[in-house]
Image (tube, rainbow, N blue to C red; front, top):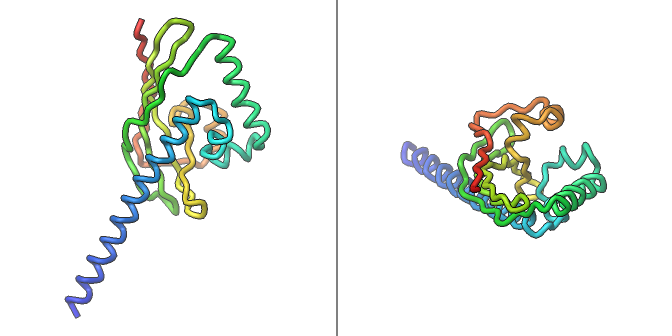
Length: 169
């Protein structure tokens, strides 16, 4: 009997490990897709990976228009995203009934000739039904009143770092 119990623990532990490894890979894959979409100004993909609470708050049409307006404003002010790179999966855990993660990234931008590097992170929420991660800029969970209102019941054990702006000129 002890052998069967030990075998059960080993099998369930192995399945959990495989599940977490799969979630880690998909979190990185989805974060990279979002990162590439931001570089390419691919509004459809950005909306696809945006947390549903955001899309619900603004409705999808308004959200798309808002993203397009941000890109138009950036263009008018001669602000360009030079590169956007996912650095690593900093943390992943199950909190409540969902998996969550923190993915760090580095964004290099040109502000009308002034180079700036932004070290930031994305906070991910796994949607099991869609088998997809949805993200929000972590800094907004900490510092943006509107986002804090949308996620009013948000609590996490994941350490969310502050964004870091590094001027290169």
